[in-house]
Length: 266
Length: 249
Ligand SMILES: Nc1ncnc2c1ncn2[C@@H]1O[C@H](COP(=O)(O)OP(=O)(O)OP(=O)(O)O)[C@@H](O)[C@H]1O
Ligand SMILES: [Mg+2]
Image 1 (cartoon, rainbow over the protein chains, first blue to last red):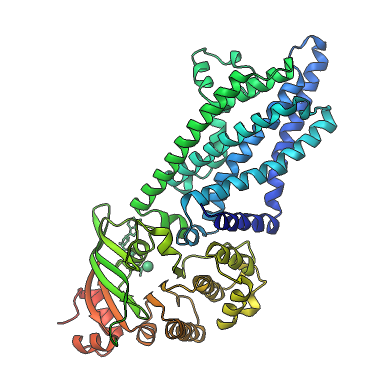
Image 2 (cartoon, helix red, strand yellow; image 1 turned 135 degrees about the horizontal axis):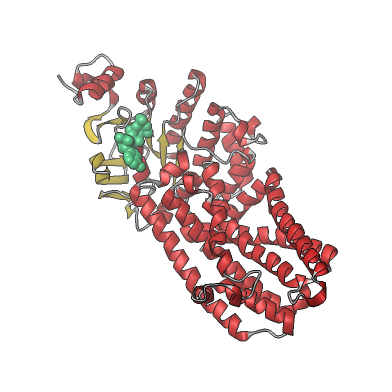
């Protein structure tokens, strides 16, 4: 792993974002829409249901913000790859002395930068509009954040592998893949609400489920559940290794099929 | 070739099938230090396929590639750091400025004093005025020359050029040819060159290989090939081969 090369690739994306501010709008626009629509809806329901509603707005806002950590990390990987496809730059990168791992780690870095932009905006707005302060969760935030980051990277590599496999026609997968799992990872509701019950086993096998369950527990009782943390971390390590393997073998297969250059020149 | 300079690139029995059809069939050749080798052939003859395999972009169905005495597949990164590539059909990211793109690649290749090197190359190609321009807004000819700049950033020992003069006007094409010649002379670069412009090939290449449907049908200096085939010019040889697949009657 050569960090000069990783940083060079990160530069390329930094230049891109400073040159095309529209890319930044996208980082802020949709998360804001989510925050406003779902925040207002919950406020409305809470007001009309009196205070008998057991489900505080904080769960929902916490879910929205933390989900975006995962989503932005995934986007950092998948959309960065697509940027290279769109600008026909992939070939220049692949004929340069860049290791696959260096390329992927650079997109991980882009993921972190995207998260910093989006999440800091969201936290500010959530605090101003709903007096939702994510930092009341304290240091528990850090393990939540890291686990979602890892999971986002895994999903990013899987999205990229799928695009490599199915071609540019499948590029909308870059936005869709995280939402394949969203209904089943208990982002906005406890795992017990997921029906039929057997799907709950599937949910428990997904790292984010443990993060969101853990988040609600911290908000409700103030205790950090080591059990959930343990499983989120173990599953993430497995997921990360598996998706790195899927990505690199898909890339090798693309080379074998002679299709890498099609991505770069069409 | 005086005293046979060292071999930079060896391809042996290079073969590539796509869906059972051979795009390249048992292609073998050597490229020596400081030599410009032209790869000729009709559309679909297998030139780009050969280049893609030499760059590690496409895996050969059979055959071996050695660059700087090393197996390409096993030493991909090490070998690529001493090579470079430019084609009329790829481009640098259009939304970045020319200097930004060149800085990114200078950093990837670990070029010392990148600012100086970039200015030097832009000057050599007479495109210093493009330094601050947005890459996507360049004309085809301008962007071809910016690509060439990228390809020379790391002072490569082996350069692969796929139709570098396609879409250039005669004046700029001439400048690019002279430039390629000069790079070869001054830095002893080995260059593999494809083009559909026979003038290009005659002026630039020391040696030429004709491919037809993935197989070598003729090899030698441009004059040798013309003389052997009893055609009037390289262009006629090209047409003859494209239509009949053979050099001689
Ligand atoms: N990924 C691929 N899948 C299937 N067939 C391919 C693929 N890439 C190339 N081919 C086929 O291989 C043959 C050689 O193509 P190649 O691009 O190497 O030709 P070329 O000599 O570069 O032609 P041109 O002068 O038009 O650039 C063609 O018949 C082409 O259709
Ligand atoms: Mg070609």
